Length: 442
Image 1 (tube, rainbow, N blue to C red):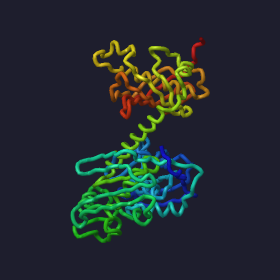
Image 2: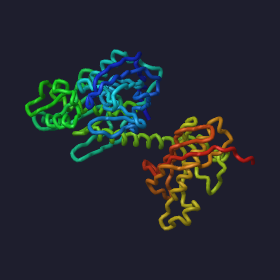
Image 3: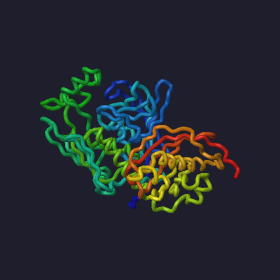
Image 4: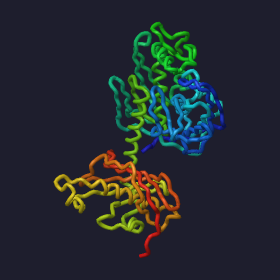
């Protein structure tokens, strides 16, 4: 639980636009930053061929592409967003819209390969505080991801800022570089934002042979030969390590809120950055779920029985811990050896039947859908299930934590996305659709 000084949320005071070719594609594109309401986060709006997609800047929307960060919603996407996200993070902007128009792939303007283009636009628009606070994600336990000699770790550290330490090593003239930056203490605008994307001469030639970056020359982007930058100069002696730290700052802002603690990376790139963000989000979600367990129940078993027609042994939700309107519900099923199904389902090695885990999720989904006023008195009858997966066995003594999120609700149907956890392990997941019918009179 965050106990520090509340962080005031920020947006920008007005719209501001910038244009230019994409860093990889060279396609002309226009980007427009706009103000956004508190609690809405960073939202990309992709416009292409008369279609519009709303893409939340969240790690779950990442599409894996080489050497850049791409976000997708359906068939539309925005590419190379990391330098833009780093600018928003470095300037402490929590809520903004980012409209992207033009270009087939939706790649953002590349500028000189740094964040400076985006920083200049955002500073011109004017960051402003909003009447809401944001709780940062505090790194409470070490999390490390590796791939060969590449690694990135999130470590407990300061709770009032984010520290990034990056180690980069390559052949001459780069050698070994170690760069440390304190977000919120050091000057992001002058010390990190100007650090540019770099590539080595052989890589640049190979990329242009494939048609990538053909619009660029060494004067436009940092191309490094054995003797140093070609037709260019380093802005910092350790510019390569600084740019990698910039990428980390942008990629980790896909957590959806500020991060506090220490990041230590060695040769990490976007793939490991994204993996760390997912791991950090998973750890925080587990902490949040466990925090709910000790709260007073939103619905006890008596109130649950007023909503659901199920009774022993088929009532599989013991408590509802939290209900957020008709959008999300969290509940508990305590699994004991006295459950009747353990008598005949692998009695030598008792395992809760997967169909009953899904049934427990469906019951919680029915409770959630009943919260909508127009559905009062209706029953949620199972219509279909999709993407059902059993991830981890559930055995006597386990506490099954159930989580259901609304995907879509209409007057007669509902669609929810469900997950069941045992501790920090995902036990089962499913997408469930219901038909909402009038309850039989008692």
